[in-house]
Image (tube, rainbow, N blue to C red; front, side):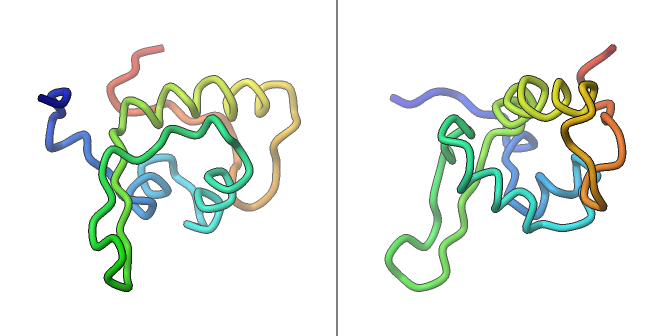
Amino acid sequence: MGRRIEVDDLVSVTEIAQRLGLRRVQVVHTWIARYDDFPPPVKVLGEGGGKEVRIWEWPDVVRWYEVHMLSKQVQGQVHGPEVDQPRRLPGRPR
């Protein structure tokens, strides 16, 4: 039996970009390709049938983002139109 996942925590690449306040979905695709430790999707829908949709668990993405992106933003290493400033993430009090 697999792990239990809350349905509201399931997100696509588009939803990841929206929740993080990114202006371009391509930024998330770049992270997936560039960082070997970006969380793996919990499910891939439509495998082998043409259009594939990958689904992640939001808390996994949040943990990865906090470690990689927020620390780089604070250090001034991440800038540009896709990321303006560190974001407060839903469900993660500061």
